[in-house]
Each structure stands twice: as C-alpha cells, then as structure tokens.
Image 1 (cartoon, rainbow, N blue to C red):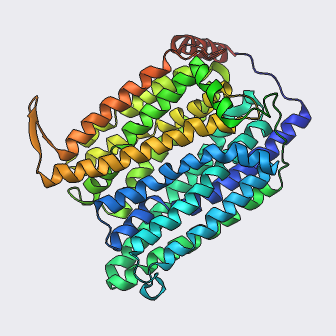
Image 2: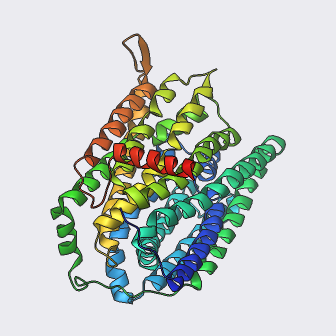
Image 3: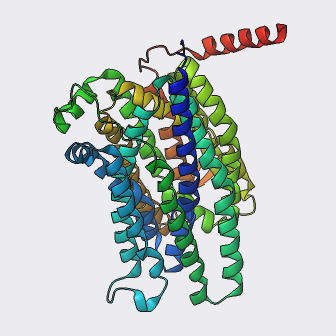
Length: 453
C-alpha cells in the first residue's frame, strides 16, 4: 500500500488538527471518566440501585445512541457539522449537571425515585452526545487525509489512554478514602465533586476544536434521503459484513455488562480503586498497540488487523472463568487481553470510514456504531434479567469437570459470541489490504534493510 507524501501546507494543517484533537481528547477523557463508568454505577449503587437498575444505567448510553441515525438529517438541516457537534455537546454537558444534585435529598424531585431521575438525565445527555459524536467523526474524516487515518486515530487513542491511566484511579482512591471515613450521607459528596470536576473538564475540551474550520459536506449523493442511503449501505457486501461483525460483537459484549459488575462487586469484592487498577493493565497494553496498529493500518490495511484483534480480545473471557473468591487476580489476564481493543477500535474505525462514502458518511457511521450500541444495550438488559434469574434459582451445572454457576454460563455464551464475531471479517474486501503473512515478510525485509544500514 503506497502512502502519498503530504505537501508542506497539508502537513502543517494535519499537525494543527492533530494537536487540537489530542488536547480535546485528553480533557474530554479526564472529564468523561469522572462522570460515567465506575463512578456512575457506584453512585447508583449507593442510591440503592438493584441489578436491573444498574443494568439500565449501563445500557442507556448505548441504547439511546440510536439517535445518531438522525445526525445526517440534522447536519443537512443546519448545514454545518461543526455547529451540530458543538450544539449537541453543550446540550449533553448541561443535561448531566442534574445527576450529582441527586446526592442531596432536598433537591430530588418529589415522588420520583432518584434513580429514575438519574436514568432520564443520562438518556437526554447521551442522546445529544451520540448526535454530536457522529458529526465530530464525519468532520474529522474530512479534516484528515485518508492515508493518515491510522496514525491520527492512534495518537487520539494514546491521549485517551494516558488520561485514563491517571484520572479514574486517583478519583477512585479519593472516593474510597472518603467513603471509609465519613457517614453514608456524606459519602455521596464524593460523587458531587467528581461530577463537578468532570463536567468542567468536558466543557473545557470543546475549546481546542473551536479553532478548526468547518468543512462543507461534499457528496454527489447529498440530496439522497437517509433511508435510501442506508439501503445502499446494505447493498455493499463488504460494508454489510462489517455491520454484521460489529453488531454480533456488540450483542455478545453487552450480554455480560451486568454480570461483570455484579461479579466484581459481589463474589470477588473488588473496590472501585482496584477496578481502576485492573483497567490500567488494559490501558498499558493499549498504548503500544495503538502505535503499532496505527502504523500498520496506514501501510498494510485494516482487515487482518481487525480479524486478529477481535480473535485476541475474545480470549479475555476464559480468565473470567478462572476468577473466583480468593483468586480474583486472574482478572489481570482478562484486562491484559482487552488491551487488544486498541487494534480492534483503530482498524475497525478506519475500515468503516474506507467503506463509507467520503464526506457525507454520517448515516453509514451511525448505522454501524449506533445500531451496534442499541444491540449492546438490548443485550445488556437481557443479560441483567438473565443473571438475576440464574442467581435467584441458584443455577449450577457440571460441564467437562467445571462447576458452572450463573455467572460462568453467561461468560461462556459471551465468549462463543465474541470469538465467532471475528469470522464475519474474513469475507470483507478492502482495497490494498495485505495478509498477515505479507505484513510479517515485509516487516522482516524492513528489519534486514535497517540492520544493513
């Protein structure tokens, strides 16, 4: 795969865009990590959320993300991707301000369970965020030349990883320390502080991108209705297979959301701080793989990186089988394997953009990402109901000498789904993609040339 050399003006523009996006991603990630994930679910748990309500909080972001399918229509109506990104991002941020206020009983809506209020505010915020992100990703695909997508998104991912290595762990430690030394009512103030700092950082993250220019949508199919454009996506055999891969994987992963949370916080007794330490193992693996995946994707294509990355991360599930009370340390292996999502995410995003129309691509992006999110959310709810019913019935069975309980059954089903999702990548046709063997031979030749020099 030949790479076109950028002229000095293009190089300077790419450097400016990369710098702005890296700063934006760093600030955004720091803020997002304090307002979602472990902080949100543990806050809900402190407010008395059951397994079903925890499952609802976990799946809302992905489920309401289906609103991203409206992004193309909104962009065409407004006529400016940058304006859509900014407007929806601001709506999302101000919607989340109500969540930390639920820590104060006198500020909660009368007669309404605070958890349902939390779910409603989260749904509004994540709906706006889904539309904002579709406009953002489409906008970036025009600002950055195609032959630089791999390295560009790798740098963006590294900025995200660097902040995730520090901020959630520090926040989790401070939360655990505060929780151990104050009463239950005062313990909730830790979440108020986390959400306040997190929302401020997310608002600050918008500033670096304000300096980048809007790029008008350029497409011969600009006037084609959304439904017809979505129909053309299904007619493309390679894009259709990528859709099936993404949706299949999303469903298999969503199935374990509640089971993972309940298994960590219940039988394994893992604290919020320990949870973020485990996550840091994944992030430490993620960083060098991001660099490698970006470099390889730009030179050899994305298909085989996506296939082998998806196969690799599926083998995190056996470590969840081995983890049990008294030997939770097996989860370090699971999070190590999940570091391979750097390869999956970078190559999958690049392949999605390559198989989509140029510029006017929000419908294709939303079809893959947001419908996948909806499936992950639906399977997350299904998994929540399923694990509750298995635990209530005290499910136990013996399989090949293994004692399988409710948690292990869901882990097994998810493992099969995650592994088989990779098989849908094999028939995809990507122009210029090289096989794994070709890549290895090329890298060996490059190493020999370097050694001679």
